Image 1 (spheres, one colour):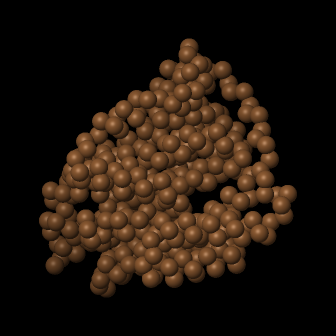
Image 2 (cartoon, rainbow, N blue to C red):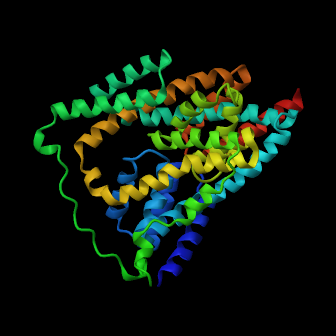
Image 3 (tube, one colour):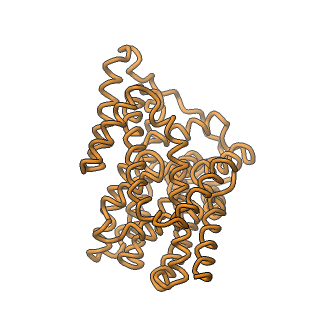
Length: 397
């Protein structure tokens, strides 16, 4: 199979996965394991787990970055861009349609009632994510101290990016001080196994050695009106530094956009759209961009938040072995993850004050949280139920 056929195959597979990948990053990763390890046997289970671990070392939406890494393994740099773009595209298109509907009808009584039913469910989904992440994010005395310090800094108004950077630096320094010197240096990278001939066959060897220029040309052609350009840089900055769960995105979005561009209620609505559509929750950026600056804003925000992942995965493929075995890098990430957890918890508290305003909304949130903790229901079903309850409440009013 030549490289052009491999590219077409990658595009078809990741468009399909992007269209059916409901359920969040864990569900996305499970789908990819089934597709590429069990069914197609492109990767061994160990190779797949190595890629999962590697993408957790960089900021950005990890399941989307896993798609990019798999694409790179299959077809070099072109495969990275094709797999990532095709995995994102279905969700972006759907979110654009929903954003246009929201702009036109979002404040009408029925859509407003529907979103008021959905908002408490989103708070419950975030609470469940916090409960699951807590043991991993705060897993030692050091991470507990970092989390406590991060909470104090955030409560007194410190910049979110500065808090993450300080937390990572503290984790790195403490790890360096206490770890045996012999364990700090990563082992030399292993020789990469030869790729199957069918996976990277190309008539021009430079096709996989040189970054493709077409995606960069497309990005340069984006509308450069002031609102769109401003949104691009806001979301590029977020995409470049955001570690941890996709819900940490809330902290950065609120800091950058509320109240200058959005209200808290509109932010929760945007997260709801990102949650109820397939693909990465980072397509929340598409929805927000459309609210602020129409189609050009949606495109600028989408490219801005995902572009760092494309670039970082491209770099990661060159140093993955060294990073995976670096004790210092693990210390840095432990600190960042603890602070990310606190950011998510703090912003969730602030958003809950907006969403949980009466007995009806509190009841929906508690019932949703109970269902999430005791069942394996997909959160999309609960969002649908919340929407239905909101509509029923309006009809009975």
